[in-house]
Length: 327
Image 1: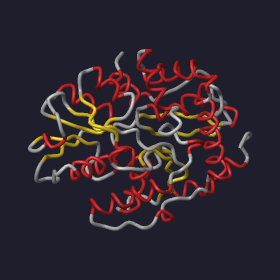
Image 2: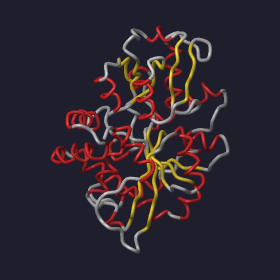
Image 3: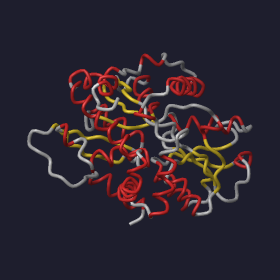
Image 4: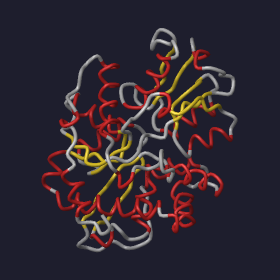
């Protein structure tokens, strides 16, 4: 089963790990995008970090940002792990009063292009593909192309495709779709298919708060203890995952969770634990990166959002960290 077939199955069925839930467990449905950023969740499920806090977790894989945002607003899922700009977009468009309650990573995004693209300037007159046209990684791509002399809507067209696994599939099937943002393990699979890595967003754009934990504000206020327990289990899963003594088992969890061959799983893990650019320690939120998220949104929507305190509440995170052994 390849990664796209696995992801399609996961959208329908959700992801589960061995171990029966108990009648008194608090049941949570969370939605994530497919990728290595889910390693702490794989670990927390597998090692029982959720279960020991009486949490029963069902994981749904997002086909698109739109589905993810709509489901959070309607209560289909209580927690999402997503580019935090998706939460900001919900708040700014009146589609949900959200809170960003932790960080996660800087997106690990690279600009991935078809093999016939030699420079970003070659994309003039071509089609670029995105998840959603007005959030997060689409803004990253527009900004990077702008810095290379290309103007959105004038010099290239934008095609909306959906989540990362869908964008890789589009690049593989349609050579007229020339470029997209991808993160591991999709960047590694794209390289195997002969596509070109045009560079990392972190180096081309700078700090960016990408994946974070986002919830509805009213849900958090009513379920504070549950959210603290969830964040504790997530952080514990993250710590276990990046501990060198757990490397082999963590690679196995990545391989199983993302249906990866061993070499891709090992290469993906090496990126995840990189001390400078890997998963954020204890899922800390990068405030400088958050400021860049809001600046990018202002630049590409023409509407200035609020400052970061409008969207962030680290009260639950700090409570989780304070009472977590080893903090």
